Length: 338
Image 1 (tube, rainbow, N blue to C red):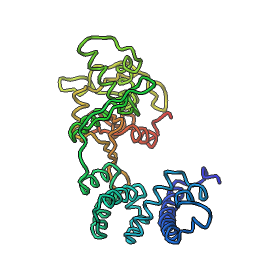
Image 2 (tube, rainbow, N blue to C red):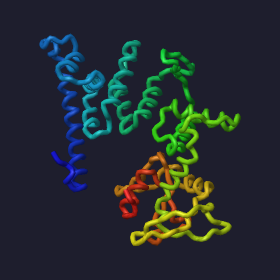
Image 3 (cartoon, rainbow, N blue to C red):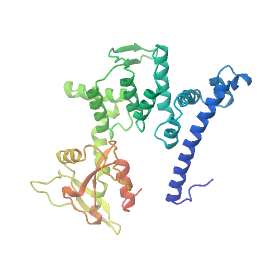
């Protein structure tokens, strides 16, 4: 099947239709699992459990089989949930996590009513995994684990388990977003190590041995240059006392007709911060359906109307875009070389 020849609209329509079909098939599979378990048909085929039947006979992975079994058992208890599965407001992982909590409650001698389960399922509809975990933790009064553990491992690494307050987690996530140009996809361990090394150098003046740390300034300048790609195609206004630009450098720009030399002035850090605050540290791109992009990953300063197309350097012509939408806009306007 060659999909490369399909127009964009048709391709998107196909994907949406397939997604709806997939969700419909998923909830039908769950109903069949319910019936197979009720009749214990896996025994007739020589399997000791429904799990063994699904992994060995139906060739599901262990995680996929477990997730579907737990979801099917919850579906049997609350049949109305199949509509939420079909329309996508609930997914298998959410159902699995709810059923796991119900299993713990039952094992502790607590009976959870169908009405309470229905209310809980309504509460977690269209929620992310993190939001779902939090709702379940509150609903089932799960204990807050505050102790910290350090466990040495055979490769000289250390496994750490810690508990962060809500504010601490927000601060760490914010730091991760701000450093996304330097650390594109860090683990939490990478992020903590980076912050620690930066603080050590700041206080003790130690040279950073890792190339990632040593190249921070260069990478940040590269990110700013990418974010302001369109600036290179136009001519900046002269400096003034209230200029939002810092002193820049000479670069060669291609305006479609010939190469010309322009004066490039780097945006002041204070001005960039002002634009980020105004954007509430989120990408300002608005999709055709009216929804705003909520990405905080690799945020960059962008000209709404590029200099090459007659735009100016006034504050009103700047916006904050994530790297993906910045490059997408450059391609759409025909000024990207990629």
